[in-house]
Length: 467
Ligand code: BG6
Image 1: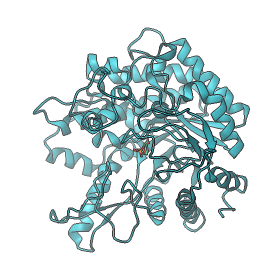
Image 2 (image 1 turned 45 degrees about the horizontal axis):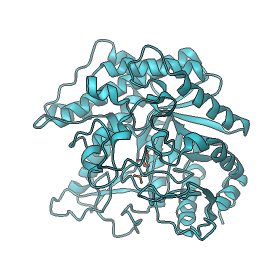
Image 3 (image 1 turned 180 degrees about the vertical axis):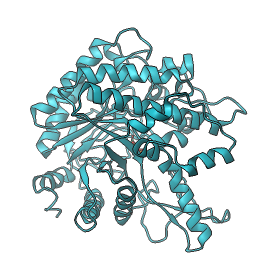
Image 4 (image 1 turned 30 degrees about the horizontal axis):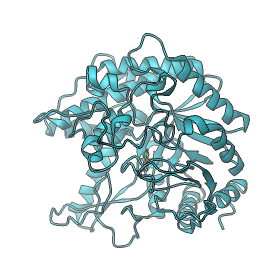
C-alpha cells in the first residue's frame, strides 16, 4: 500500500536542471485546456496570456525529501511516480541523456529506499518532449519507438538496482480520448483523426513490448506492467442492444491491454479497424515482438464505473468526464460528476482478472473534492475517507471472496497536485494538503488532513482497521 503521483502534476521546475519543454508544459489552465488536450488547438510554446499550472505544480522538485518523509510517516510501502522524459532527454533526440535529470531521480529513489518504500515507476505519464512534437509529430511517427527505446535503455541500466516495478505507459487508452495528453497528437483540419490515433496506438504498443524485452535483458528480476484507465461499462437497460453497446465500449479499452497482455490484436479489433477503413502500418517483426513480450501484471486506475445506451436519444451525459458516460440513477457523484461506485471496482477487478489471469495492481483510485482547511491547514475530509474505505472494502472482497490476485494499491495522488483533466488545484484527492489555489497563489506549505491519520492506521493494520 502507498500512493501515486505523476511527474508533470507535482514536480514543477519545468525548465530547471536542464529539463526540456514537455507537452504538459504547454497545456494551459482555463477554457483553452480541453481544445489543447484534445489536439484541436495547437500550442507549441507557452505565451503570456495563459496560466500553465504544471510549471510550478506543487514544487515536488525541491520538496521531495519533505514529501517522502510524510509518505514514510503514513507508512507507505510503495510510491508510484513517473519520470519526466524531458528531464532525461530534454529534446527527446539528444545524443546523450541529461546527467542532472538522471541524478534527480537517483536522489529521489534513494530517499524512498531509505524509508523502505518501494518505487513503482511509470516510464511515461502524459508527457513527451515538445521538440519531438514539433519535429516528428510525436507518436504519429514510428521514430518515437526508437527514442522511447533509448529512454528505456538508459533508465533501466541506471536504476536497475533501485527500481524493480515499471509501467510502460500511463493509461495507454487515454490517447483515444485526450490525444495530445496521451500521445502528443495534434490534428490537421480534415484529417482522419481515428486513423492517426490507432497508428499512434500501434507505435506505443510496439514501444511497450520493446521496453519489456530490453527490461528482461537488463534485469530479469524486473516486473513490467501495462496501465489501463479501467472501469466496466454498464448497459443502461437489459435490452440486448444496450448490452451489446456496453461490450463494444469495453472493447475500446481492452483493445490495448489485449495486445500488451495476450500479445496480439484480437479479431474484434481487426474487424473494428477494417470497418473504420483503417489499415495499420505494421512492420515485419512487430507481431513477433508483441507476441513474445507480454506484460507481467495488469495495473489500472479506477475512479468510477461507466454507463452506456444504444439509444441516441438517451444522452444525459454526466459532467466533467473524459470518458463519456450516462448518469447512473443508482449512484452518487463527486462535485466533478464522477460517479461513485465501490462495487464497480470489484466488478472491474474480476473482469480484468478473468480476462487476463495475471496479477492486478490498482495504481490509482480516489475522490477529487474541494477541501476547506482550517487555519492550520487541517482538513476534516470524511468524504474522502468514506470513498476510500468503501473502495478498499470492495477490493478486499475481490481478493478474499473472489480470489483475485492483487499486488498492491496506490491511491491517487497522496499529496495534493494539479488535476490532469481540468488543471485545477482545488480538485484534491489526497492525504496531504498543499496550500496553493487554481490561480497559482499560496505558500506551498504541506499539512496533514484527517485522512492522513486514517490511512496511516489502514496501512499499519494492512487494511484491517478501516474505521
Ligand atoms: C488519471 C490520470 O486519469 O486520473 C492522472 O492518470 C489524473 O494523471 C487522475 O490526475 C485523476 O484525474 P483528474 O483529471 O481529476 O486529475
